[in-house]
Every structure is written in structure tokens, then in C-alpha cells.
Image (cartoon, rainbow, N blue to C red; front, side):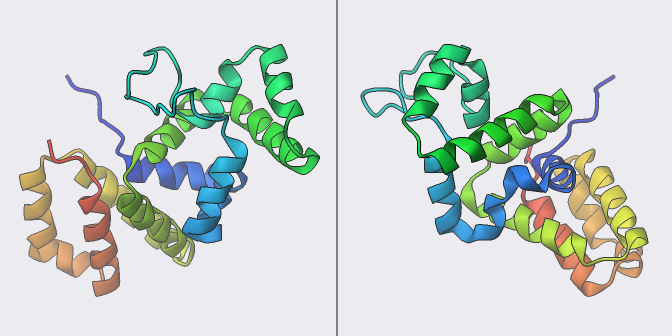
Amino acid sequence: MKKPVFTIWALWIALAAASPALFADAKEGNKGAQASQRNHAPPPPKGGQFPGAGQRADRPVYPLDRWAAMSPSQRDEAMSRMKPERRQILQERLAHWQSLPERQKERARAFYALPADQKRIVREHAEWMKTLPQERRQAIRHQLTLLEQMSPEARQAELDSPSFNRKYDPVEREQLRKMVSTMPRE
């Protein structure tokens, strides 16, 4: 029997609710997020290589994983070149990252791996979910979990069904459709 696969949207929503400070960049907009990534991630490998471009297979891709994988002396050396305020922020984020359960770390890694347009959809959905009453949030999370476990054809059939249209108002239906667009098409 296959275990249910968590999709990126569910992972992001749960992580965003559990650790908003970890993803404070999401509220700063794209420009702020890019600057924050430059400020908080270790530099790329020498030669301008990025993940997947001839780089060692054992090197973590997620920035906080890279920092956590460094020895304390390597980390201290790299942080010594930072401004004190940047170093303080990174140390706080790293301490928070190391305290997270593995499941939440996987959610963050999955979100990090998303293309920019899908990240935007997930961020907007997370913000929208915060505006809903608790019972509607639960209903929508439940529906997303069900949709995630379906094949793409079954998802589409569910989205087109009359019962789906009765359960959710037009705004909720649109949000669910956007989140389905971020799900893998296996």
C-alpha cells in the first residue's frame, strides 16, 4: 500500500503556520526575498556552479541544511565575514531550523524547490487561509488532502462535480483550483 504523498502546498501551509519567522521573506516581496537569500545562504561553490551543475552529490541544496552541515569551525569562519546583524539573524534561523522536526524541514525543502510562480501561489494561498474562520480552514485543508491523494484525472472530476460546487463558494473553489495547479501531474 502506498503512503500518502504530501505535496508542496500542504507542506508550505503547515510550515508557514508553525514557523512564520523562518519564512519572513515571503512578506517582503520578491526583491526582499532575493536579498534575504543572498544575505542568509552560504556563497555558491567556487566557479559559479549551482545545484545540479556538476556539483558534489552529497552537498545539501537547502541553504539552512548547508549551514547545519558545516563543522562549527567552518560555520564560525563563514559567519565571521558577515555584518553582526546578519550573523545574528542567521544564527537565530539556524537554531530554529535545527530545533524543527524532520517533517517540517522536509516541507521547507519542498517549498524551496518550487518554481517561483508556484511559490507565489502557495504564499498567496497561505495568506488567504489566515483570513478564513477556523472551520472553513479545516474544510479546505481536508479537501486539499483528498485532492492530493487523487490522480490528476480524479482531481479534475472532483473539481467539476456538482457536490464540490455546493460545498465551496466561488472564491474557495478558485483557491482550491490554484492549489491543485501546484500539485504534481503524475
